[in-house]
Image (tube, rainbow, N blue to C red; front, side, top):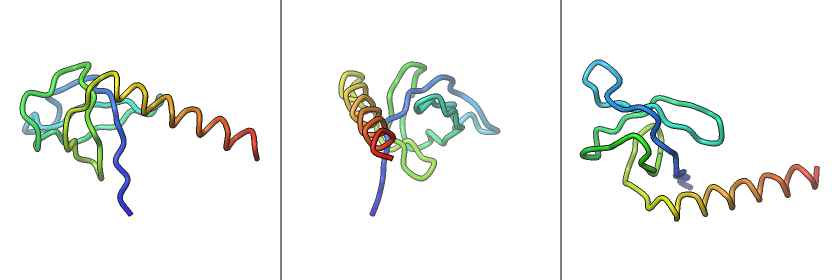
Amino acid sequence: MCLALPVKVLQVGLGLERQSALVDLGGVQKEISVELLDDVQVGDYVILHVGYALSRLDPEEAERTLALFSELNAQTTAAA
């Protein structure tokens, strides 16, 4: 089973070859590779899978997906 998550790009041009970006997912920040995509910009949402940005995502779609994840987490936490 594969899991890919939408993340927001905070910084670009990191790493030795400037092929990395700093992203945020619910307050967790991580450096990922953006070498599979052209012209990633700060503020873009990308789909993250095993450390690589696979594609860009429409900001509204990304925010809806992240809201659903947050809602699911709240329900899971309340049930525990």
